[in-house]
Image (cartoon, rainbow, N blue to C red; front, side, top):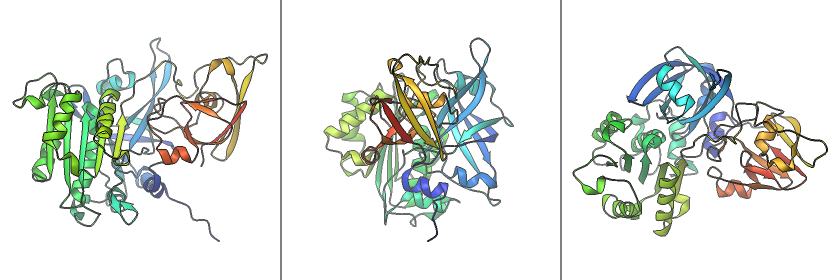
Length: 411
């Protein structure tokens, strides 16, 4: 009986997950969005196009080498959401577009906003992530059908799936995956409605302002935009100030029809996303209909570059035995019990190509299946309940609690 293998695109369609791999791509355009944000376009040649198929809402990790504070070369990798709906060109090539907002103290984002230019090359990871719409019929989502017909999804209205009502709440660069999702869902069915609550400090900070206005002009009756500015006075008091619990309740009660929503998308800092999740839960919204993605920031105890945080192994002390499978090869590493080292960090010390991106429990790139042993997982903002039930863990957040642990990155 022949073995049926899934393509990268089919795997992404089925699960929103795939094995991460980096390839060098060339920058074809750098476009200024705001004073501290840019949109970067990468050319994907035809021979690599299948590896960079994606669903709107997914992200890529970018990797390069930059000097650290002491001037020494240091690998840096950061994850950024894809901000355009999928499309391919006549010659079979495609492109990946991401938005990079400069973060205070952010090494990569500061460098990219100041120095990244057309013609530069960066290592770009194959698209990952589960912040995607699951609305659809016949076992396929609207977004999966878009992926099957990547050229000009706006011309396929009415052919891609059920109409629906969707609401997104985003802040700052949280608009990046949301605008791709909105474009796709609105194009998919002439009866679909999309409401967007978008929070920023001031009008000058609004990313994709013109693109959102164009989208509103294209779908005036079906797209509702609600710009909330925390440091700039607006005519409507409800649209002025930070989104706190009271304001969120008012927005849900007046600005949108919260009782008729098929799917919710939340993207922004932890505090806002958690507030929205708690508020929706209190209103009786089924968690299965809520998708969320968080911002991440660097922490000194996370893996550094592709080598892992240094750990001294003393043979006279007790250690955990960590065994892992990656690309069909088995690796082993001893981890001192006193170090409370993550499985990812330990694996990186002996195998630098172990997949990871954020190392903060958010993106899911380092996901693996726990084959034997037990672990404790600090944080999980990436794995869904069905994945946890099947034994998957985030290795960046998992610490051994048994003498030996085995994980499989290939499953």
